[in-house]
Structure formats: C-alpha cells, structure tokens
Length: 216
Image (cartoon, helix red, strand yellow):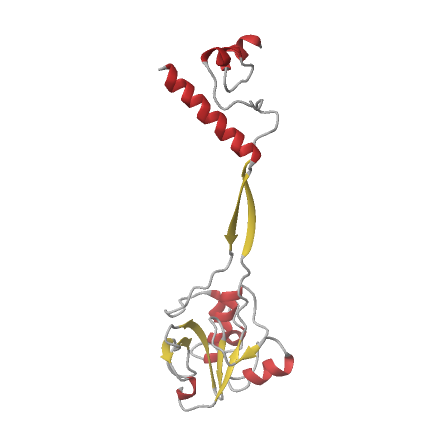
C-alpha cells in the first residue's frame, strides 16, 4: 500500500515539474464562415426575397438568374453584393469597370460564373475538374443545380469567366494556454526518488500534505 501511495506521489510530482518547465500550448484553427454548398432551392430566406434582395425589391425576383446570384452571394458573405444592378450579360462588365471583385478563368467555390446572357454560382469544384453550379432562370426554372466539364457548353453561350465575389474566411490560429504551473507552487527537489523518512520530513505540500496541514 505504501509503495502504491509513494508511486502516486511521484507521478503527480513529476507531472507538475514537466508542466512547469515545459508549459503546454496548443493552437486551434477557427473559421466563422465555412462554405456550405446550396443544392436545394431557397425557401423563404431573406437573401432571396424582397426583404434583402435588390432585384426582388424592384419586381425582378426569382426565377431570375441575377436575382438568385445576388441572393446567394449575400447569403455566403452576410453582406449585400457590390453588383446590385444590370442583367446577366452585363454583370461581367459591370464588375470589370468598377473593379468590385477579382475575376479569372479558374473555378472556385462561391464564384459567380458569367456567360453572355446568364450567371450562376459555383457550389463545388469536383476532383475530375468538373464544376457544380446552382442557378435560376428568368421566366423558367426557379432553381436547379448542374455539373459541367466545359462551361462553354452551357446553352451554347460565350463563357466570360468567374467573378470571385465570395469572401473566403481566413483561418485564424488561436493560441490557447492549457496550463502553466506557478514557480512557487511547489519546491523542486533535486532527487528523483525518495524514501519514507524523506516524505515524512518534506515541507512540500504535494509530497507531505499532512505535515503542511498541521503546520498551518
């Protein structure tokens, strides 16, 4: 029994020594706005209705590709898109002229895909290089998704490229201090093993709690 108690004391003591000399710190990655693809139709969310959607407020709500793209970017970023006017064929040039967002030919999630008379939103870039988009159609389908390997094949329209309107959140490393023992918490002993008499005579609260209680 004494041996078990002794080993327990030693385990606690050595653990505290290690934590004091080598404080433990971890880094946690946090993100407040992870991308979630939309694969189902909007259902009353304010981004797509007259409550927040600039197109719906003027009578040109869904089904309408620009009304949908406007609402989807609003939903992703949590703030109104900078492009808030024009038809589908004008969005690419409005963005270029005003330098609202970066643009390019590389597909990225959350990007607005622009054709000569249509816009859609990239929901996924697949491992085979194909692109999954979500879209709406003026006077037609309220919402649908589609997968394209060649964006130029979309209704035979000229494909301009992608507007990178989605503001991808930065991954922040948060330093979390787990435990740091105080220097005065216990007296560091030079020896790494102790006999019964040494335990009994120690003034260390961890090693000899009974004696320290009586001394108080």
